[in-house]
Length: 168
Image (cartoon, rainbow, N blue to C red; front, side, top):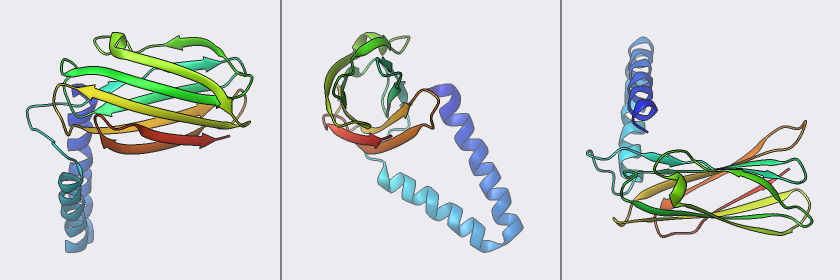
């Protein structure tokens, strides 16, 4: 989203550049290398586009909250669908789903299967866009009642089923 993406990135680069000046040429060289690597690793990044985010939250009958998210390097208007498939432990069911507000919410689809072993949560996320080769980063965070969260992440492109598995 525009507000966090650009400004936070610029602030971190400014902090990184100041650190490089304080620590000599090595800090500046590392900063430049990191920026270069970022431009090489992100496919189809276009200057006229901003990233948008899909972020549904699933509350399960065993008290676990599962936060599924996808950061998509495209405009909300070009995103056609964000399909999530969640595999949770046997015996669980969905109590509630809180979909993303705004334009992406109606484009989110969730399938649920209670077919995993105890404590194992797997998500598959597939983004469909009007463009092709759009970079996508997905993350799954599980938060048990009274426990510590566990998270996993994956990156790829639209039209790929990106898998994340988390164990509690």
